[in-house]
Amino acid sequence: MMIMMMMMQILAGVMLGQSPDGTSIPEDPQASCRQPIMRFMLLFSRQGKLRLQKWYVATSEREKKKLVRDLMQTVLSRKPKMCSFLEWKDLKVVYKRYASLYFCCAVEDHDNELLTLELIHRYVELLDKYFGSVCELDIIFNFEKAYFILDEFLMGGEIQDTSKKSVLKAIEQSDMLQEEDESPRSVLEEMGLA
Image 1 (tube, rainbow, N blue to C red):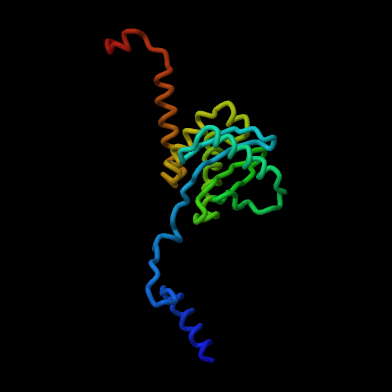
Image 2 (tube, rainbow, N blue to C red):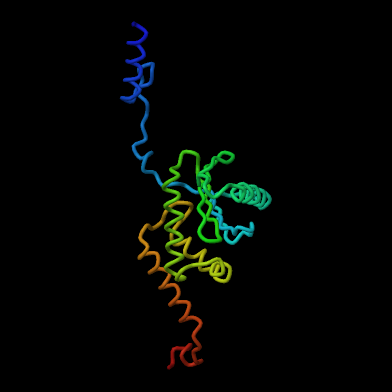
């Protein structure tokens, strides 16, 4: 009976933020709503061809190649009905297959998998809006735009802007600037005389 009461007191203390010895447990108020900090993002085909890679943590080229090869092999060997989250090395890997492409993110062990899955989905939505029903060929032939969209959406592995309209507007403005730079102008216009 006495042991039962002690266990209930300890349990009640833990629920109130106290450790069994009575000291308070420091609580991170933002732990539940923290953005995932991504280590890297990969896009690869069902055939194992890497289409896009973005690293947010300094890693040697040799290590990158080994990580990419191992991760692609692990993800591609999984059955379609299996969970899209897996614990891999000291990371959580979240992946989603869209048509023939796998979008794969590696996040810290304490990060929220569902938030990362939502991040992948938002990136696919942005690609879809920009390219109009994005496919693997769009990524292959316009990889610089895919990187630019990713950079507008994520910075340093964290979400920079959640608004699709805002990201697409920045991309549209960049496209207009690029078109202005590429349009032929006369020598007088370049000198400001026309």
